Image (cartoon, rainbow, N blue to C red; front, side, top):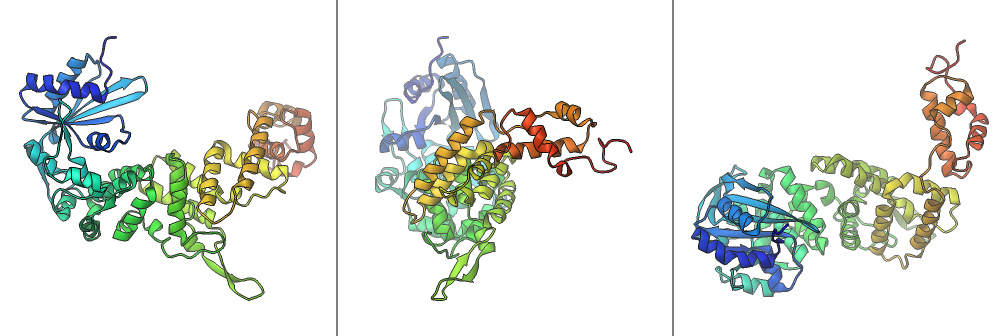
Length: 475
């Protein structure tokens, strides 16, 4: 296979021959140029803007030039085309867009697009730091005269009036929060004010686009910067009022600040894993609904309580994530982590082995994410040490080594029917659940069929068929 490996350097080298062959100008634009200028790592997606050239023609020319076999996908309505190339490490996507001028109807989600010049195209882009162009000779062009200044001043600003920019595409308000978190840049005061004024416009944006932008924000270097910006501008209330409800909810003990402040810190400290950061974002979402006070201490001072907040929060998290149309399996995993998040936090070295085994079993394949969440939750407080969590991790590892196949019933359905002399019925499921719990509690050894049957025989009322139930012996 002599196909060219698609790298930014190879793309830049292709721009001059592309221009000669197609008769128009071509420039790399956007995040790659910004990150190159700032000395930051860049992703695997590259954007090319072409002037007086059809985007599909440019993508097909590059496909031939590189000797690639992957198809070109075109989006004629928006004047864009994509060439996604398989590499040894994944997928590199080059997206071509024809230089354009576009406008949005106030009640529409779709733009009205017409061909334009390179200058028109960069002025209608979202933020100045994303308007830099890179040509085939390696020259960086700043057609707005603002991009280089804002890049080095670390500022998020729009090329045009921010209200007009957000009117064209309200999702750009969420993108401002994401770029602020990703780049750790300051948002221009005018952009901040415009986000607050235009926040209601976000309602015309599809749920999927909002969800995807929020997920990108959560995986940024400092998500708390974006989350605080969304809260300060009222956009958090528009997107997720369940999160906005955490603002101002006091906490006691080792906690830092109110529930929202603590949550922002926990998200920053969580590993950049989508499920773990979603769980960190939502782990205390049940606290506003469960907040209470009890009298405690000799001075009679009130102590804040949040009884049952993990269970309440799991229900709230599941509802919010389904509303945002997160895949059901991921929503279920996040809700499960929220439901379990207090268990590692409450661990003490004097826990019996069966308590550790129960946590190991209940967490299942989410054990790693749960411990990562617990560490982030603890570090986002004034609690002085992670020693207890380190000890719990060691004990969980010992359980995993003792039960490499997981906790399983030592007797299958056929063996149970044979020993009990009964037919199929719901009793088999009850018996196996009891056996699994017995293995978890250390009452029955893994694979010990005789011990398992003795355990069941000692308490038949908990599993034996009820009168008239399928599987019961005839009268």
